[in-house]
Length: 335
Image 1 (cartoon, rainbow, N blue to C red):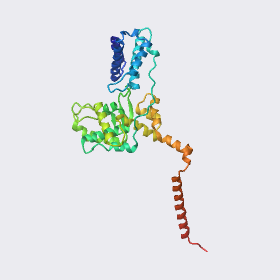
Image 2 (tube, rainbow, N blue to C red):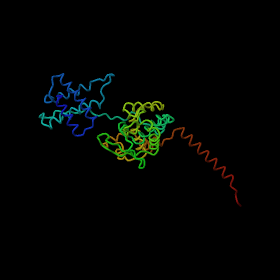
Image 3 (tube, rainbow, N blue to C red):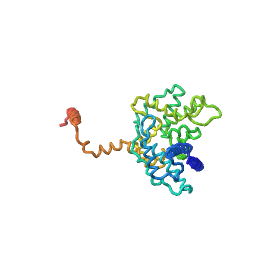
Image 4 (cartoon, rainbow, N blue to C red):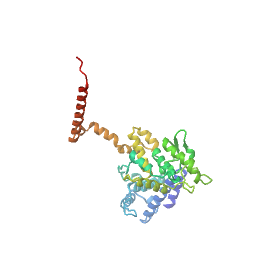
């Protein structure tokens, strides 16, 4: 089975699948092959629907090192890798039928983002970097870029200087998720911080030959993904807003705040680089301002005044009546 897995991965590479996807499939397929071999299954032709359902059951009851169960995404990813492998084997006539075609994946739970920042909370986080220090200038530029564009972590790491268009106010995301390019607007404030970093700080760190990456470490190397995650998470925590998160937190926040500001969801989809509109529609559930407006306009409870509201209204009426009476006393009566 592992020889055929190797051939399958080579086919994925030949059809320009992303390196990260190929590596993920390799890991997941070898996990399945090891599990199957322990049960005497050494060739894909022996894989039946019953075997796949047993494997799904195993994944459901599996536990990570910290004792927690595998999430829905991890389970579905491993099963999807096997389904695609069997589909390829059937297509290439290596096995007569695809047992994975009838396998149901775990149902995706409807989950909202863990946290979304308000405008004031974002501003608190943005003020955390010490901009008197070169590292702080870089970090402020990173936070501003994430907030303004909503690009993914790896998209920010891979961002090149030549793909930042200062005149048009855009950044070009090259080979984003799904190997797709897209153009994303970047706000004036974010662009100013990026320009300040590129003009004043980056030249101090760059090492020839220049990689062209916008954001570098002090040693002149592109940022690593785990380092960027730690960096952003630290600023969110130190802001003292009572919320946690990292790069994706700014992506969620950008999308939600733009929807609340009246942006069309199709433009949000284009900016985020979502292949399906259903993925973007998640943010309509997070955007509470529109729901609050409808609730206030239509719910009968909003027309019922509390005793406190009534007392405040009475005071306003008394003050208005007193001011009108005072104005009338000042008017001269002409005979």
